[in-house]
Length: 332
Ligand SMILES: [Zn+2]
Image (tube, rainbow, N blue to C red; front, top):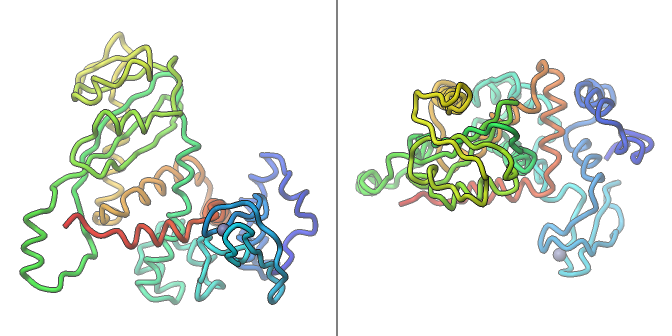
């Protein structure tokens, strides 16, 4: 790995403003230093202590260097690993192309256009996209709601896009058993915080909503919900003040679910028109992409490359999450 910064401690202790400027210029900085996404991942990961990719123990010792790359060994389970093991760039075949891939991705290009422009195959384009998106999942922990919070359910078409059947019989069988819709919980507040959660079932249950809200709101916020059963019955312990409002109504001039409904429609349009629908097992990945666009990627393409690279490099175990989701079998 190339040395990107002389004093890593100084780099890691940057103020919020300085680090924002750093990410905005990160793409140019990496090009100037002839560094790639793997080099940056190696730097970024050093901001947190090493964890074993196998047993998540932090009882880790350094275990020599190989071609200049630090190796580690877990004292708990014996697993040997590198600084980038398990991250979104783990086992990447053409690491030098990843930065350009991120450039195409944040520019909003299709999988096919990204593949053509970067010079990779279409399946590789797909896996790279989902390795990056898998790393965004943990950012849902950073989303909290304040003040008047609107919550609702969005029904999306259940999809197994990309699935191949071995026979017509298998396809017909699968068609019969498929659910038609999956419910997505959507919440937003008046400061623009927004989050969605694929419940993976046909309607959101009270437990799903409780789990979704846990730690994201305090009992002092005001929750506006629609009239659906699970939403009307969100536990009192979660929030003291709850307003149940009909679809097109507004209570006392301020309580409504209009914003959350508009945001839901905007998200659904993004999924159906930009991607022509996505496989349900990847829906949460796209949700986090959408959330990241609103929360972290508001600049131009060049500054968004650095921001996206930094987000993708923040998760130590993104590769495993990518692999887990890709292996999910369909409902039937
Ligand atoms: Zn271990």
